Length: 246
Image (cartoon, rainbow, N blue to C red):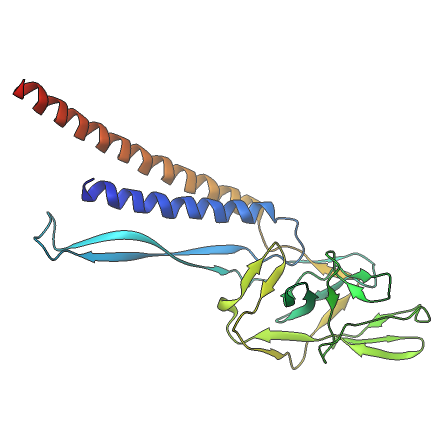
């Protein structure tokens, strides 16, 4: 396989990844707190040591370098549910999943059978001390202040822990709304701002994502056509050489 085809195939691999990411964004258009994923492409330089190829001594391939999350906040939608919470500004809620604490912007919470505040998957919302936030049956009028303080007619219940990551680019997505901090340190947000009775919507803009998907598809088709044309050219050359020798 010649260099031109190798370079084109590297672009096809990267373009396939780009279409997968865009498709994932479209699938999470209605996922609360979802942050759109974006791709970072770069050049991978292959320096030729044994001879110089036509055009110079360096071949440039397309490399799928990394991905990152768009930090632009989604719009807030009012729900009227006292356990729906939205974050205005930086920070994440912390929930306790089967594999340990996870960060999230999805604030659709409810009460579990034991009074624990849980998300849609049943993961418990944690307070500032890292413990599960629990509401008793005697607490019938629950209010959440902007700083995360949870109170009822019986007094203060606890305080929701809102944290930020030292390096947000190191957060690893798990599903549509959970993030694994991994080895990245987290710290409490000094002045969080929680809106009770509201949820943050996905920051994905469907029209833009559909346009991006169409551009990705056109690029993929163009490069695929180049690879096919190059393969046909090589096959025709082989056929002519074979015919001359016979």
